[in-house]
Image (cartoon, rainbow, N blue to C red; front, side, top):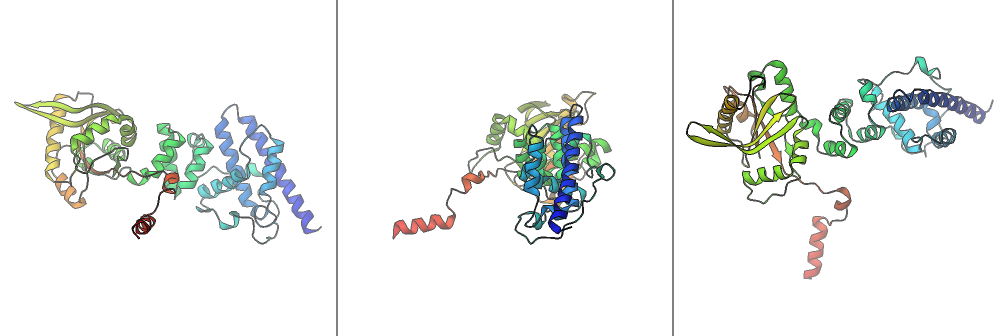
Amino acid sequence: MSKEVSTELTYKQLLVTFKQQVQSAQAKAALAVNSSLIQLYWNMGKMIADNQALFEGRNSYVEQLAKDLRAEFPEMKGFSKRNIFYFRKFYLFYSGSSVQQPAALKEMDLLETPVQQPAALNIESSIQQPVGFNFEIMGLPWGHHMLVLDKAKSVEEALFYIQQTIENNWSRAILTLQMEQDLYNRQGKAITNFQQTLPEKQALMAGQILKDPYNFGFLTLEPKVQELDIERQLTEHITKFLLELGKGFAFIGRQYPLQVGDKDYRLDLLFYHIRLRCFVVIDLKVVEFEPEFTGKMNFYLSAVDDQIKTADDQPSIGIILCKHKNKLEVEYALQGMSKPIGVSEFTVTQSLPAELKSTLPTVEEFENELTKDNA
């Protein structure tokens, strides 16, 4: 049998298996449409990876597979050439075979490789679920999965964003924003004394809701901005502010009044966290962290627990947001404080959209134009 005939037979056998998989997924669609579809893509990705030689080199069958599947199942979307590459990437990423897409599959201008016989055609006994996946995660829309595959640097990071998307019901636009703002590396990174001041379970949950730094890029601030200016703008953009804080925060008030003895005090921002079942006091500072900030927050929390907290509420938590901090200085300042306090930085970095960036001149180009005008 010639090489060309052997290759053709191998491909036809594989196509039959793909058709069976599609038909099986269609039969389960009434129970779990998206979950079955994601499982189908995983299965197909595994078969493509197992039959590598058919899908690389000059005689690659990727385009042919896309064409045949669209012809066989015209009512189904998702069988484009681009998607088929994603099927393979999806499988390799979560199976641990590879995090980066191998160069051999990026372009089809490589030398012809020897044809292998179809692998794992008895797919029911060989397909496994992705590492760390469960039914909920399999239910995430494929478009979200593609986005995560493009941006996540590790399986751990990918699963973090998938779980956050499910818990918070993020759209693709919100998921994109959270990944661009590097939520994975900011979540749970604040310096706190929660382990010393809260019950173990509450301390773990509270630590996870805090970020460092917080990104307030949606604000428009003048060089000599004051705390009140930031408070005002945060409350004017309350939807974006709540998105940055994370799920569970309910806004109570700005410059919230407290009376202790004969003196009046005002809290910068007061929230209630629904999952933690506690009040959260946020103190904004546009300067570098100073140790006395923790003493003042400890005082505020004592007053809130005495005057506002009910018997059903957990101990109130304080968050100090400042422009800069020294880790060791914060740790020393938190020692001995009786109330749970976390310290984070905030930034107001505003990034331009990629399409706008490409139209703006660089510093060098701008200087060259000025030189021309002055010549």
